[in-house]
Length: 504
Image (cartoon, rainbow, N blue to C red; front, side, top):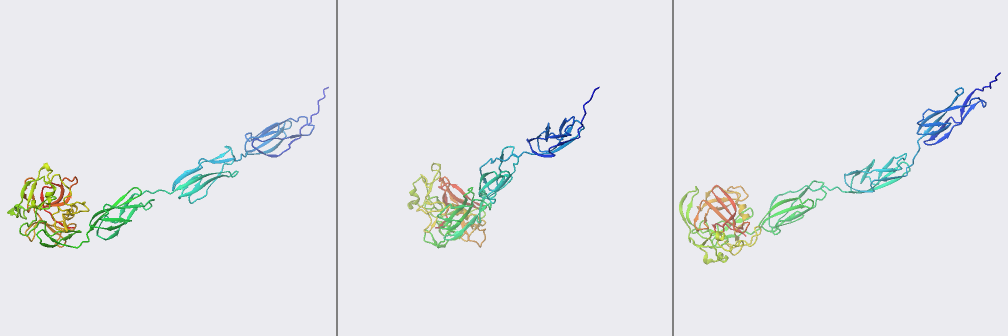
């Protein structure tokens, strides 16, 4: 007979822990107790409800990642079970350091740039950082983005939440430069009298331009000087006042005309005849008659070769106001015609007073060889100086090109004046009326440079200036006729033209 061993069934199983907290990577061992002690089959199996969080083998639990898992032990006999609730916390990797990609940086007002913070180690658990500026009025920072607000210095600091590790960047902010775009003056032209002052105001744009400094200058300091915009009139003439910006060299100008603060004198001609004072037109005083005028002999004045002191008379036809011949016209002392190319001294030789020197291209159509551009003006266009060759009486001189140019801007129609001279009235800058200052220029005609013939009296007026042309080979003059007038820049000096003097 066979006798079987008595079987003692499992009544229960228990674990030494019902719950447990771990950190990623940790291990611990659960102990299972099967009851009763004499249970025949104490075999057990282990399992985890979430093997990605925690695993178990023979009671040894290994934490894999943060989360929860239920560890279960179960008996083979009877299927009795017990559990342990395991909570796995993430492993904390402390911050060791923080650094910035820049330790210093220069900026301009309004600029931005972004700092990059690097927290070490790479697997640090808490990489959160806090940004701050030592001077928020100079530079602000948000999430590493730095904004420059005004000129100055500021320290940008980054600090870790974990461990309060820090790094800094020194920021230097420069003022933003707003370039000058333009400069203007409150006046573009101005008339003054010797001794007067006035102040120009310069406006630099834009309003927020960084450098608004300007430099003042005058094109002719002997006529008008300028200091900080204050213009002082020194003597008659013209000058251009210029303001220039330091930044960008932008310029603006004001054309200043200085009238003489003169004492009017009478025009006493070469015959000793007093014709009274001249006429002030735009600050230039014009003689009342042509140079060489004589009521009987030279009613239209004499005709002068440029640079000679002495003029000659006229013989030929007179044109009437309707531009038709109506009489033979003869001045006294019709000149002797001789070949030119003589010395400069001949121009002031009274023994040659009534000699007209013809010329050809051989002498570049000048009566003197070699030519001299200073015979009537040893100074400059803006600062003329009368010479001994000037035909005008004391206190008077041959006008400059600029003075003739200003005179001819406005005129009357073709007419005959009270003396029976054909020509027209000139009023300078003022539109011509009978009420404005004006001077009558007779159409005295000319003498030809090649043969010496006189013609065009009553049809054309030709008036010399004391100014040579740009190349100092010819000279400049005014030409007018019944329907118009113009300033010529280059005319042969051997021509015989009229002269109307101006007061010095």
